[in-house]
Amino acid sequence: MSTPQIVNREQWLAARNELLAREKEHTHLADELARARRELPWLPVDKDYTLQTADGPKTLAELFDGRAQLVIYHFMFGPDYDHGCPVCSSIADSFNGVLEQLKARDTTMICVSQAPSDKLEAEKERLGWNFTWASSYESEFNTDFEHSLSREQSSEWVPGAPPIVAQNAADCGTDPAGYMAQRPGLSVFARHDGEVYLTYASTARGLEVVMTYYGILDRTPLGRNEGEPAYATWLRRHDEFAAA
Image (cartoon, rainbow, N blue to C red; front, top):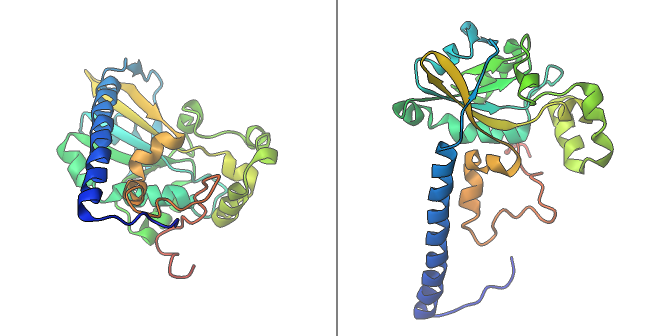
């Protein structure tokens, strides 16, 4: 932390009010962006997908669980992983506690991964999550929505990958090519007149909306404190911090 500027209360309030004006501008811009997201055109999902869950096979429409909207977090957990990605695990921690609030707004939120269902359920039990975690192991869902690649495709990206890729790959029990064969993302679907539509999708820094710890850290003096370039090397599954 750099040496802070020390001021009296009047000076602090003046500085805080100046920042508050900028924060309000940011809030108004965020409102405009949210409206623009709602106004995006819808893309019909023409293919029939069936994914595996703890309650048996379910179609994409059935995963809505009777609600109008379905939010899917594409969790990096490939067939050859022993455990899910630690960054994705931190994201799952962030939204697992608000599932009931989302349901109250006619929205179901789940995760989808390419690993077999038994691996997903074991990880879910270990970490105490209660969202539905669907497996696309026997489906083309992940590849069609570009959240899973072949090992041959991902191998092309390995030479230029930052060190965190090798770290996370080892943590998941796979190699960098296996790790990079999976891609995180957030997809939103709507159901209308019996049809399913893709209405929004995001990845990379667009996923920070479901990384609630960043919003909190961004308001502290140390901030994210990840160094430059910023890589989240500190993130772990929540039951691993004590050991670390």
